[in-house]
Image 1: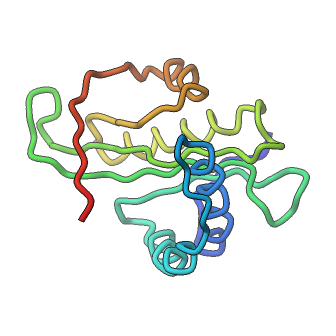
Image 2: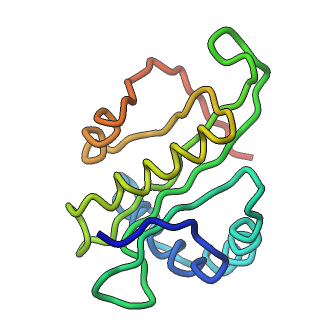
Length: 156
C-alpha cells in the first residue's frame, strides 16, 4: 500500500477534487465546482500551517502519478471543558473520500488512523463525524459509536 502522508499546499487542487467526490455522493448534492476557485487559496494556506488546527492526510494514487487516491481531513476545535473532556478539545472529521477506482484497498482506514493519531497528539478528548451508510462499518471498526445528537443548523 502507498504511504499515508500529510497533505501539503501543492496537493490543494487534488484535495478539492476528492472533497468534491465525497460531496457528490451525498443526498441532494450540488454538483457545481465554481466554489473551488475561492476555496483553493484558503486551503493552500491551511495546508501550509503545519502547527494549526487543520490537517489533511492523503495517499498518492498508485496508478496515476500526480493524483491522490484518498483523503481524510479534520479540525481541532475548542469548546469549554466538561466531564469526560475537561480540556475542551474536540476533533471533527469532515472529509473522507477515496477515488472511485482506488476503493477497497484500505486507503481510507490508513488515512483515518493517521488523523486519529494527529488528534491524540493534540490532546483531543472526543472525535466526531457524520457517517454515510457506506462508511459506517469503517468508523464502527475504529471505535466510533452512534450518538443521539440534537444538531441544529443555521446558515448565515
